[in-house]
Length: 70
Ligand code: SF4
Ligand code: SF4
Image 1 (cartoon, protein in one colour):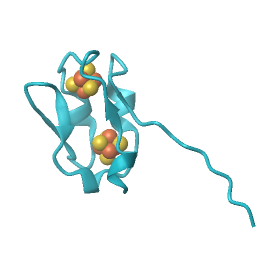
Image 2 (spheres, helix red, strand yellow; image 1 turned 45 degrees about the horizontal axis):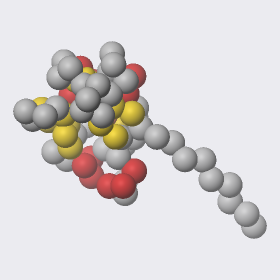
Image 3 (cartoon, helix red, strand yellow; image 1 turned 60 degrees about the vertical axis):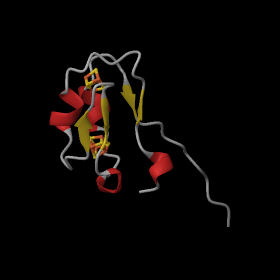
Image 4 (cartoon, helix red, strand yellow; image 1 turned 60 degrees about the horizontal axis):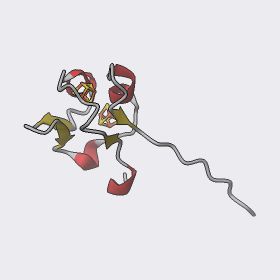
């Protein structure tokens, strides 16, 4: 996983509920004073569990669709 592809966290929307952290099957997130951050960024599989768990849409995993040309 390219670190630039990690889910993005909008701290202005985050209420620090920790649901993203407890939902992550890879234990890739940790809480800080500011909000969640990645403690194991290379463990992220982009599964979207954190995005689905977040009640305020503060953590989101933007997807980019690319077409491969032959
Ligand atoms: S996308 Fe999945 S693996 Fe990555 S931080 Fe969110 S819950 Fe964890
Ligand atoms: S689930 Fe959303 S609101 Fe809760 S700590 Fe994570 S990013 Fe913040």
